[in-house]
Each structure stands twice: as C-alpha cells, then as structure tokens.
Image (cartoon, rainbow, N blue to C red; front, side, top):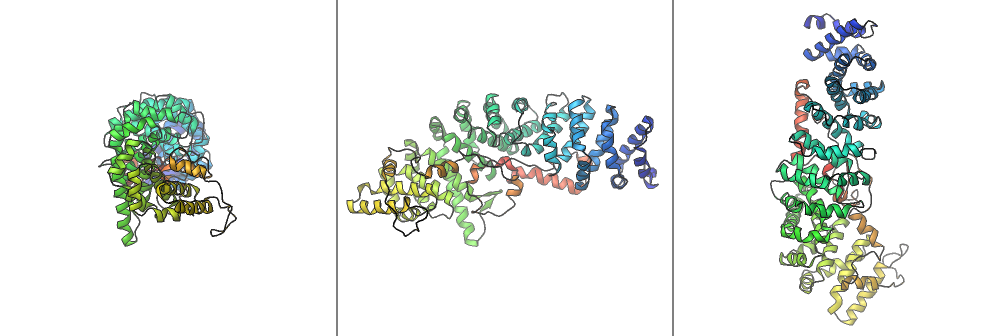
Length: 572
C-alpha cells in the first residue's frame, strides 16, 4: 500500500474508476478503499485527482457490496473536510445516498450510507438538501433493524437533521417509532430519540398531537425517571415535554397526563443539584406549563415545587447582583440568570392563583423580592413580577407587606410602561391597595390610571387624554375579573407565556454565542421553541485525528456545560 501511494498510484486508481470493465472497477475501489483506511494522506491525493466526483457517479451501481465500499470512501473523504462536503453536494450526492437508504436492505451498505449522510448532515448547505430529499423518512425506515450499529447511526444522523425538519410533514410513523425507542436499554438510542422528539415537536402542532396520542407523555416521564442524573437524556426529554404541554389543542390533557403518570415529583427533583442551569431552565419552563392546569397545583406544592422555585429565584437574583458590581453578565452553564428570574417568577405567578400557594409565598417572605423586580430593566421580568403581585395582593396581609416594601412608587411608574401587560397589572395592584384609602386618594388614583392606561398612542405621555372606563381594572383588583382579556394587554401577556406561535430561531449553539441583548429578547426566553443543532456529534474514533477528537469531546461536553443545542430552549 505504501508503495502504491509513494509511486503516485492514487491518481492512476482514480482514473480507473471510469473504466467500463466491472472487474477493473471492483479491484480499483477495493484498493482505493484500503489505501484511504490505512494511509490518511491518501485522501487528499484522491480529492486532487477528482476522485469525489467519480465516486458519486458510481453510486448508481447496482452491486450492493461495491456500493458499500464506494459510500465508505465518500465518508472518509468528507469527514472533517468542509470543501469535500460542498463538492459532493454540487454533484447530487445527497440525492443518491437517500435513494440508497430507501431502496436497499444490505446491512453493510445501509451502515456505510448512513455514516456518509451523517457526515453531510452537519454541513449547513447539505442539511436542508437532505431534508428536502426526505432523508429523515428514509432513515426512519431502518429504526427497527436488528443491527444496533445501524440504528445508532441512523438516529445520530436524524438527530443532526431534525432541527431543520421542524416544518416538514409525514412523520407520524417515525414519531411513533421514536416514542417506542425511549424504552430501549441503549443509552445512545434513548438520547437520540429524546432529542429528535424534542426537535420535531418544536412549533409543530400536528407532531405534538401525534406524540401525545402515541403515549409520548408517559414514555418521556418514564425516561426522565430512569435517566437519573444523565442530563444528556433528561434535558431533551424535559424539553420535549415542555413542547407537548403547550400550544396545541390537547395541551391541557398533556399537562394532566404528566401528573397522572407521577411525573411532577420526578421533574421537581431535577430542580435540585447536581442539575446544571440549562436543565433547570428547561424544567422551570415545564413546571410553568404544568401550572396552567389548576389540578396540578397541589402536586407541585406537595413536591416542594413552590419552595424550590423561590430558592432558584433568590439564587439567580443574587448572582445578577454580584455580577453587576463588576459589570459582568450573569451567565452560568450557558444560561443567563435573567432567564431564570423571568422563568421562576412566571411560574410562581401562575401557581399563586392557588390560595395555599399564596400563603406559602407570603410565609417565605419573598414579596420584597418581587417588589424589587419591578425596577428590573427588562419588561418581561417587570410583567411577571407585577403579575405575581396581582395574585398576592388578594391577601390582606400580603398587601400590607407590599406597602411596607415600597411597592407604590415602582407600580405608579410602571403605569407609564409601553407594555400594556405591565401597565395593566400595575394598575390592578394599585387599585386593590387603594381599597382602604381615603376617597380623595382613590379619586386621584382613578385619574392617574385613566391618564396612563387609556392614553391614545398619538398622545404624549404628559398629555391629557380622554378618561376611559376603569371598571375592568376594578374587577381585576377585587378578584372578580380573573383575566385581563378585557384590555389590550391580553395579547401581550398571552404571547409572553407562549400561547402565540413563534418562528424558530437559529440553532441554539449560535444563539448562545452572542451577548445577552435585552432588546433582542422581545419575548421571554423560556417561551422560545428553538430546534437543536448538534454538529458532528459522533463519528468513528478510528477516522478522527487529534483535533477532531477534541472537538467531539467539546460537543459532548455541551450537555454538561449548558451549551447544548436548541432543544434546551424550546417553548413553554
């Protein structure tokens, strides 16, 4: 082999790939394959001699053993070489590889083809082309194959592709198979299945319904229970549950189902150490979704969910204050602490609709913390803080604590907020607090509310608009009006909690790379649905050089360090 390579035999072999003689082709591809496996430097010689184009042309051959060697050669040449991936795309390699997965049953060929597709699946230009050619469906045909190595390769490849397939249809059978695979004893199979389910249910109501109807809630809860502290499994599983418990017609059924399958206690435990902040953030969003179902309030309370959310809120707030002293961002395990503050407060806002939960919050003496959040420089945090105060103010003792904490001044300032949800909650709390005040005070407050809340957009802040009717706000303050839907703020608050569909963002790997920009996050981070994008997640170690092995280790560390891809940050 070394003699062939050193005597410029590689270019000769590449030319022979165009031979019309079958025997010559077989001997040539066998020799070339052996050279690529044994002598890494031979790969560049093959590329320079135009070997990639000739190999792709041979993918139309009918002999499965011959095709297995051709596809494995393509895998070796494309692995870790972006230029080769782009070149094979230009000669339609994705089309041929997908066709092979659809039309053949020879295990070695399927394994080689799935490896080749896996390498291409991490290329930004090949990925959409593979999805377009229905690579996901073609790979899914082999999920029940008896070959474990083939199933694992197929799943890793689908995991890589799934963030670009969130808007595709025709995945019913695939989703059902993935739910069944969650019960596998193979860690790789369970990890990938959970990740794919998380991605394919991202912003896709039909897929959410399909997974729910296939028993996905029970399977995912069981997966979380059995995974223990394996965050590479629990994180995508929790994010999949977060998708399934919101934004589709059976969301409330799904929320109930988590409780009925004894999932709440399991999930609340994930809020404790040693869970990293990325997993905690996902669980907080799921708990918020579960709280939307009043029947879950007792279970969350009995699992100490309210206490733990308050602890996380205080911890995140302290970290923000600590970092503010040095001017640094409060960023831990790939998560901004502002997101934890918003998420925990939003969950507590919903849980505070329950009388017992309000008493717990009052006894935990966290009302001053909520009051301080009103001065936060992010509208989303101001809104959820005002919202939880609106629930707590129904208790007379809590109202007194608010006033002693100086809540009136920040609430009065928030009446001028351009965010109608913030302004409306602030107004409702102020009205409730004014019930025991003098008539003169209440009259002045009524004028202030009318001036601030019912101001036409064209009127400047200090201008004298027409005084509107504040009966709806008085209903809110007295507790007779549960929703703010009677005001324009309804849409703002509803969208902040994830009721309105959003366009998926770029892969989370890219999202986390940029600095925290409050102006960019017009909606709470915990209400996002963002599909995951794991790059070059797994390849055969024998084919990697030192740098690629290091990159692979870094990718696997993403799970532990909170930089994992988009299923970490999906809709509430």
